[in-house]
Length: 351
Image (cartoon, rainbow, N blue to C red):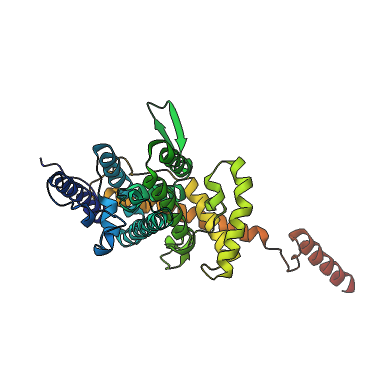
């Protein structure tokens, strides 16, 4: 029986492009020892990438060593498969474009500015490539979708919740920059983290769980839930310092009309959806679901329907509890019987 890889179309295409572009880059690099350097046509190099605008996308799928290639392949295979099924291919494509192009362009601008200020030609010829920004973005997306899921590492000797992965990832890349000289990973990890959070927090249109079960087309723009605020990506001790700073930045963004303020209804709906997601698991991530190609999708649809019904039930219960009865109480049955007996007695005396 031939081996069949159960991957959605876009994740499969990304995995194939990662393999092809990395092999192409490796073959050019070998030839460059005796001929012309061809890497600028695939990766971003500040001194020559303006001639190759497509590198803002292709650079994210070029890896230069086996370890980083293996990490990128695993990220796309498992992370891309789950997110594409959860969001649909169209929404997943928007997310991938947003979190690869913008970090690459900003990193390119940082190195150009670095060269202009310092005159260091090494910075002008730095090769910007790799899947680091997309890896950070996937972790942010998982933090939104399944924050309370626990991952066991090294035979359960280390257990960590999904919501802590983004902070750990950017911390490790922040330390590797000055220690190992991988400053491109430092910039790409932070920019991938920030751009993915901004997109999911303020701009992405997602179906409302409260209307999924009823077939309505209501959507929520962004994620206004309290647990998806920027400060909540970090430990409690750090949140005390970050919250005033992030509030000031948010007010500045509102003043500049970069984003719109969240309404009370949007905050309530987002909190309800975050609460429902927190009680869900991480289905089909490692196994791809049961029952063939459509089994994972059916299980995911059933899970979403159950969460939607639960969120809707919680909302209706809260609304019923908040409702105060205004109509006067009807007379009880004993009162009505007594009233009738009194009327009958009066009638008999009169007779």
